[in-house]
Image 1: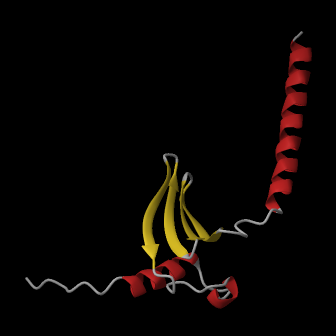
Image 2 (image 1 turned 135 degrees about the vertical axis):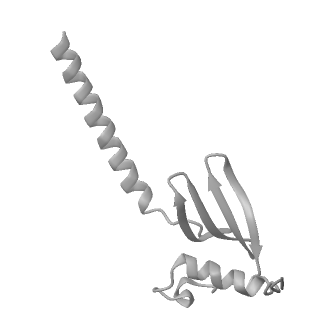
Image 3 (image 1 turned 180 degrees about the vertical axis):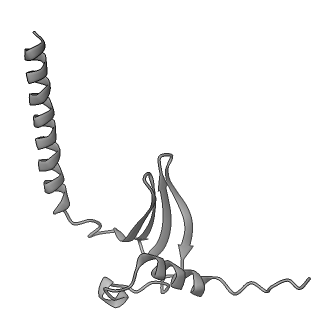
Length: 114
């Protein structure tokens, strides 16, 4: 009885692993955001938290994703980021894009004198 249980457990684990691998391959090839919504960039902050830069209907949004759901962090100016990935340059990192966008959006804060 123990041998049968162990063999069945191994078979179930193998089938589950195979299904996950096949589904992952099938989903990786799908284009994301070819219509109204386009994901420009994503950066993981922690295992369950990420930032997304998304274009929706002419607006550029920075969204925060966590186990609690999605939340709007800020809306960027339409010209804050390059229109196409080729304009962004292959070598630019997400952090550089966000820093450039924030720099254009916010005026410098005057420093306080003590």
